[in-house]
Image (cartoon, rainbow, N blue to C red; front, side):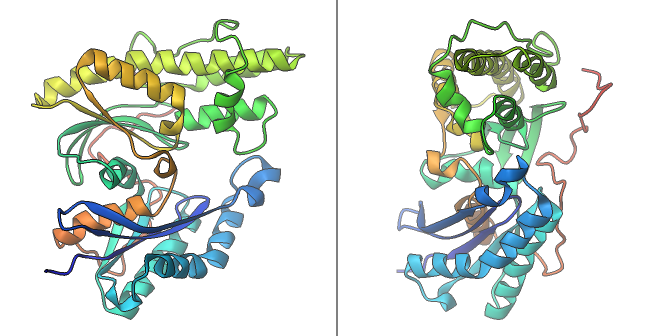
Length: 357
């Protein structure tokens, strides 16, 4: 019986310090042996958002014991690790540098290969941790920093079909929550409040709804929410606005996803139509249910990572590391942190005022 690879994954791109050990079973399917995530909610709560310097300091304080805990919980010996995979970008450079430097030093001390991982590719491959997933597939990446439709042709081979031209969807959720008086991180609480409200109470705008292909925009929606919150006087009105906001997001994603389906099919002509939804916002059950129903109607197979692996974690980083390890795609120890690192590096940068769609 041949030894199965053991990969240590390290993640520190924003405000989670995470480490994970993964391997494979005899069938070649990934096995998560440990997955440790430490968040920094208490560190940033009073500021209403992530403070980069404080986040980096917290990573420095925690990363030693987080990695050690991942190794201990996996039940392996440190010398059995075959490679170290660390997030190199995108993210906050002061945060990326902590996990990246630690991973390089760890790999060097063990004389084992080092693998630099794109954080977004971690999300893209996260469903492989619990699902059989072959290329190509359509990916909707929805998180606090990113909102994109991508055609995933193979490992590290992506074609962007659509992206946000301003705010990411998770950012829109968090900012709406803040306007409603919900403590950071408030995005997930929007779904809770929405259950108590009337989704038809407020008619909110849907920017570039009827143009721009499957590109997205949420800045105008956020501005509309800001104006309404200035007039709100009761808790019920807050619930109604949360419900109306979530309904608007769902309507935008419904239409844009249908457009992305057509574009994906035109470019790939797939034998099996697979739709992967990943990133922190993929944990929203109402969005999940809508996309599952849409997939059923359009003959797509919906694939989501487990809820606990939707947010930032190191198991998804180790997953990319495992794929690259098997292909012997290793990196040098001078690999730099990359605060901006798009999956499709050939795609035109689309962001900010004046973007023509």
